[in-house]
Amino acid sequence: MLAQLKVFGMVLIGIIIFPFILYPKRRKIWAMKDDPLKKWYWYFSDTFESGFGSDENNYLNSTYGVYEFVRKKDAQGNWIPDYERFESFSKIKKWYLSYTWMGFRNGAWNYIIANGPKVGEWENVNCKVDIGEGGCKIWRNKSLHGKQSITWEVEGEKYFRYSFTKKAKWYNIQRFFTLIFAFKYHRYYNFMWGASTNRYLVKSRTFNVTEN
Image (cartoon, rainbow, N blue to C red; front, top):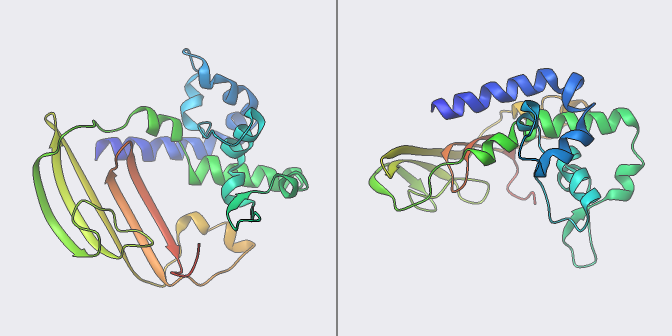
């Protein structure tokens, strides 16, 4: 829980320093990914995405979240980044996308990845709540609805995992600014908190079941 609170604090700091350090130094931050002596602010920004065909595409997806925010379907019906449309955006809109991605969506991502939970055999497993689909160990998400709560240990380290999906009329705090541009009514709310397979996770979102 303390690890989660530390991440939350880092995200808040990242939101504050974004206009002054993270965005102006975005190219330098990206270049730090292979540097063993990274600057302190590297851990407050999202510069970790790869596998998009080129170093420049990796940079665009890491800094602006193009593959999530500006995407299109290819001939096979798969979602892919729409780099052409992204390049047509104004500087202000690109700044806004970067702020949404690095500050709110993936804030402090580098720190989260670098400080994940231990991987190993689960011991002293205590299933507290298992309602709905998926089983006690499985996160409730957009596809698996219900509620789950479980605690366990790996090499003496204690962990927990808690999540639920339910019908709701609430709006995700991450959508607060985007409501200016796109107002949608979402019928389900999902909350996830705890240790995942490779990171500590805190996620809150609203959605419709039919959304991809």
